[in-house]
Each structure stands twice: as structure tokens, then as C-alpha cells.
Image 1 (tube, rainbow, N blue to C red):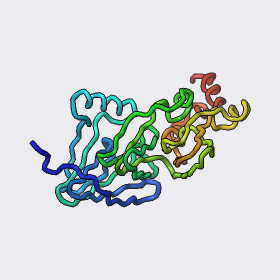
Image 2 (cartoon, one colour):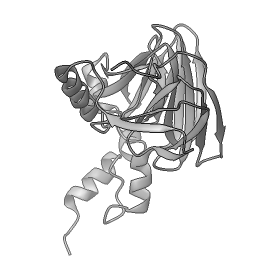
Image 3 (cartoon, rainbow, N blue to C red):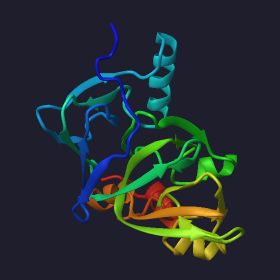
Image 4 (cartoon, rainbow, N blue to C red):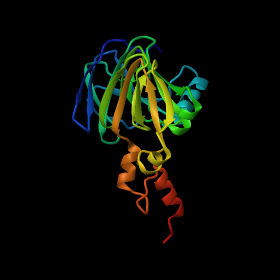
Length: 257
């Protein structure tokens, strides 16, 4: 049976409201379709229809897509939204933070941290992206798997705290606390380097490694990570910081009560 409302590729009408608990309000037109991470919808008008399904044309592609999303830290299913008449749907992250928008032309990609995907037009492809260097994957706070979002279309991602944006010139480098990188252009080179000296690594409180990003391209950094928030809300017994070498050592030799 043919689809009575086939998706069309037109610019989205949206507004981002709030400060550190942001919500994106998207006003859908007939024929426009979004897909979102399960559980990220905040509200919708009655005219907006939603359906949870796996993406892909065949059962094999659907299962492979679900497996990839699980590896990326996302849910197995995506929720799709469309409306036969003008309607509105709102999305928000699952912890305090901000929303970043990317309007991607055809073939343009960005790499983002795991768990950051919020929603996008169905023309945007969401795939696994392996980091370029093995060391970066095992030692960078983002983990070995990153997400690649490829246009055309508009995509929304969520990160913690506030955002700082950098437009790096060719060869320009910035070093960032591991885990605080929200996303970066595919043209940016990503690596991990050990901090200056052993004393800084042990007593500096910033961990052993920093993420090193070299331009050209745009980099977005977040001021708060979910892991930091978890540590502050439920600190380790003995007060050790699991990110620092000193905290790890104190945790290993801490006495049991």
C-alpha cells in the first residue's frame, strides 16, 4: 500500500528554548518526518503521528541497524514523527545541558559523542564511526565508538552544561579534557595525548590524558559530562576521583568497612 504522506525534504521550522534545560520545539509541516532516540520526546500536538520501528529496508538491514545503535549506546528502536496537518513536537535531553543544531548539506558529516543524538530529519544518516587512532578510542572519554551523522538535513544533539565552540584553522590545535568533546567536523583530526608530566598527571586532577583536536574544522566542547555529574552526586567512598591516577590508587588501597 503506498504511503499517503511520503516524506519530503524541506527546511525545518524550530525554536530552542531554555538555558541549561533546553527544549527544541519543532513545527512540522505535512510531509516532513523526524526520527528520534526513544524516550527523548517531551510533548506533541494531537495531529502528530508517531511510530516506533527499526530503520532499514530488509530484516537484515533492520537488525544490523539496531545492533549498531546498541553499540553506540542508543536504543534498539527509533521513534518516527509525521503529521498530515501542521503540528508541533518537542524534544529534550535526559540530563541538564544544551542542544546543538547541525544543518548538514548532502554528504557533509559530523562526529559526535555517544548518547548525544536527540532527533533529526529522516534524510540524515546515523552510523557508527571508528576513531582514527586506537589510542584515542581506549583512552579518550568518548570511548572507541563515535557517531557519524551525514546530511542532507537538520540534526539535533544534546550535551551537558554549557557549550564552547571553536573554529580551528588548518593546523591549529586545541587540547580538551577527555569526555568533554561534544562533536567535531569530519575534517578535524582527533587524537589523545598524555598530559605534560607524571606529577601533573597524578596531582593535577585532570586525569592522565587530554583529547587533541587539530583543524581545519569546528569543535564543540561541553562544560559538564554525565560521568562528572554521576561522580558529584554519588562520590566514591573515600572521596577519590576515579579520573585521576591518585584517585585510582586511593580507591585500590582503601579499606573496607
